[in-house]
Length: 438
Ligand code: SF4
Ligand code: SF4
Picture 1 (cartoon, rainbow, N blue to C red):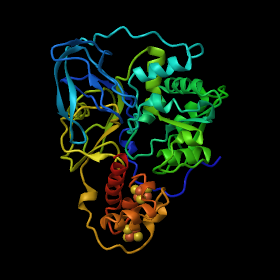
Picture 2 (picture 1 turned 60 degrees about the horizontal axis):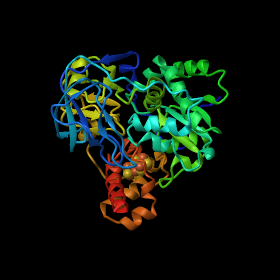
Picture 3 (picture 1 turned 180 degrees about the vertical axis):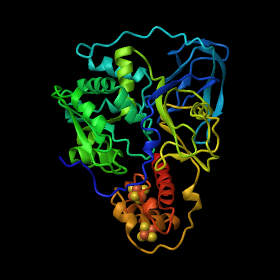
Picture 4 (picture 1 turned 90 degrees about the horizontal axis):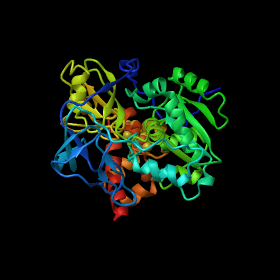
């Protein structure tokens, strides 16, 4: 059967060979652990520990404050060294809890496993909420809210985003290969919340080994299917994924739940597994440390709070001086200038590149080739939107559906004139979103 897809998109160099065959290796932190209280969309969590307190691994150290918020847990045992603002990956300074690791890894007593066949819907959602699980693909939206739509009976599909379409990233790929049972059981928890839904494991066709394993393990599951997607960027973007797997369309003002879908990424679903079946809150994630400037590209199981410097060291350090370091993938991630920042719930990768092609590119005049529009999955006109943004022309920007841009970067990638299309449109979108919020 042909692989499923969407209109538009690009095929960038994928760089996955650097790390795809590297099994997940656990990294134990060496230095202090730093926990920003804002690692999610919504109100920052409120610290509930103070300097000098002794904490255990798995102990709550910051409480959710407000409905859209999420608690934070210690991932080592040790002493609270400070509660103070610390630099995070975006360059901002965020209130953080700093813990000095005592290297004992003493743990709290975790709550018992939940029997999903007997537990109530509320009990399951409360456990996921309390575990501090948020969208670990980068969005950071609290997962319990996603799993609590107004009308659960109207959810037809629970989709696991196994596309991993961003170049270089292989953390989801390794998870699927090494812990497929956890992924499937995590999906079963979500299916328990939506009695009429079908589960879909949506995998790009460049991960045939994952497709085969998942198909084998779900062959007797009547409510779960494995769907193969065409390998194309941004196949894993929420709107494109929903369309490719179900044929349903959403725009920028809709949620997948509006068309009967719930979407979660691989690490998030595995975190649900840990919370329900092991009673463990969100404490770890898989991070791909890669790029041609890294000595030994790897996939690490990292305790949240671990310093980025330590991850680079664990990967053997730099092979050459990197011109660019990115947190996340090359298309949607952002450049970082200071490695003295912690791994957070949403940090999927650390990419070090010997060449910064984007900065080196010389911008020239638009030749009206139309390539940017051809590849745009948001079906907008990137060059026109860019001009509207440059002239601060909000009316035209909105009329041209500028808010439908998902900031995927495809237009900038193909532009022969090296126009900073995505960056310019992104700034205008940010301004509009801030206005709307006000
Ligand atoms: S305009 Fe937005 S959605 Fe369209 S290609 Fe550019 S970044 Fe992607
Ligand atoms: S791809 Fe670049 S050069 Fe071509 S129309 Fe778009 S902005 Fe102009």
